[in-house]
Length: 430
Ligand SMILES: [Zn+2]
Ligand SMILES: [Zn+2]
Image: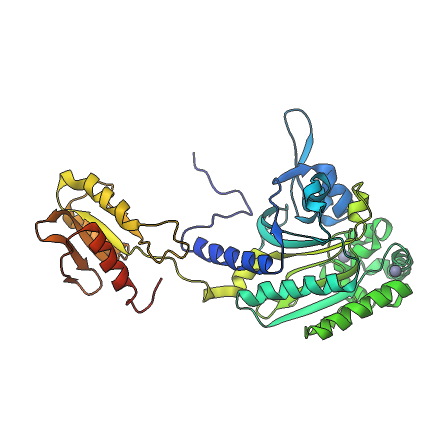
């Protein structure tokens, strides 16, 4: 029997995982600097949570959910996105609502049954932020600013912000009818899915990826022409705020995003290096969602970023994996435990936040000969080999890079200080 990773998923291995750690750390810092706190929700939720928020007629709900019944017959779904679970948590935990606004973020895997293609997975990672409470344009500007800050903090400055407004309960129905009438006139040129969308949800036609639908979509009326005065003023105020924050943007009247809960502002961020269709992420307002879930009237806005895409863009800027500073070599078969004890003593203080006083130390656990241990030490790229048992004149130390023996060190403390001091002189620190 031979097992393989499920189709559309992948293992993240050492060598790559260090880049993930780096990205996670950087994005966490950006979130925290803006006052956002993390919420970790379960990977699965009641199926209805997603059907009612993401929307029954969206591709995500119609074709892409991983839904299953548990042993008591409850219908559960692996989360396809992070906003609905966070809103559920927001309503369920009064502690999250003691201050307004509420600033939250999440990071973790999402699940969608999509056709696997380059850079797209059925289990993929997102980091997202949600700002619950404010209705005004300052919140929209903060979200877009935070998104850019995350990009900047991982070294991506060449980004394009696209913004649009989808209107609200007052003006959206008007637009829906306008585009339904338009697409009806061109129905024969639409793909099968879009013909269905004409009846169920004509707005979804705008994000159809079938090439033959593109020319029809390009001629569709602009949502911006249908906005009511309040939505139009909100959109103008968002644009003024972006200008005030010196954030360049482009208005993208066809931008709708693939979820039904968005109202008013939607936005995407594109980065040089991904194709024109490939946003790094995006988001929008969802002023009705909290209320739809049975909560108080709570306007809100959020975004999510695809971490796989972010990693593609980050390229080699993330640091390479750390190599061990030291291999402790047991010179005699009976000194393996002594080698482990010395390794532990050398590693030092894990409570030192920057690990200035800590050493990466590995030790043989394969019962190898001293010679084989030395070969292994150079294979794993250790900077020094240290030998046990200690000789009468002190611990022997060998510089593995230069291939020469160093002065002996008389005690564990002396050895530690010497190694840490010398590591500081290494030209390219870890
Ligand atoms: Zn189509
Ligand atoms: Zn409106």
